[in-house]
Image 1: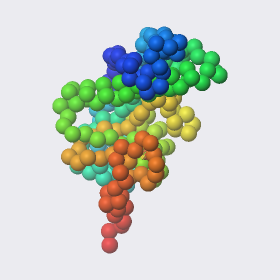
Image 2: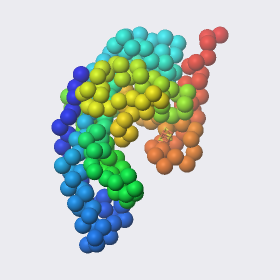
Image 3: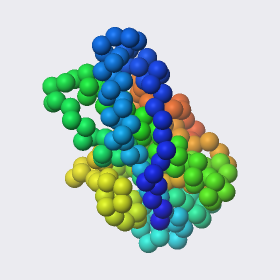
Length: 232
Ligand code: SF4
């Protein structure tokens, strides 16, 4: 188990201002600079991971350190993998405590963007850390709830969190009854070594998704369905 709680970060104020369409040298720009100072002081991006081993495989299940996950896509990805790294990365709950009025929509939008940025710091720091510490080559990741709903149901967040232990106590992330994470700018999943490129988006039919990172892959989709068919 590893906790990364002191993740260094520095905001690119110009890039953020441009993204948020804040005109330089205006009152908005001065207010944003002040807001960014507070975010810099409050922000605590964090990540938690565990080095685990695949202990067994069923028809559509994979057992990792005593916890069984049901997902044919996960099973296919871990077919020849022994060591995996379940993780949670987060923007941290501290930044959400900045004092912003409920009806201040602009500042709430700024906060949302800054939380997203902090999350990107924590995920990239975690990936770099794992690669260096465990001398990993190419890796990919799967997350409960990503891809089509049947690919790896979001309810399996419960198993993932139980594999990682006291996630709330260690990095302040908790699951709601509907298995969403709080803070919402958090990501979870299992990172694994692979020789091929894999993105959950390849197994997602959702059209017009602004976050899509890879096109839907019919061949990959078919191969996973094929894996499910009982032997003749
Ligand atoms: S296409 Fe969008 S919804 Fe589907 S897995 Fe990718 S990011 Fe998620």
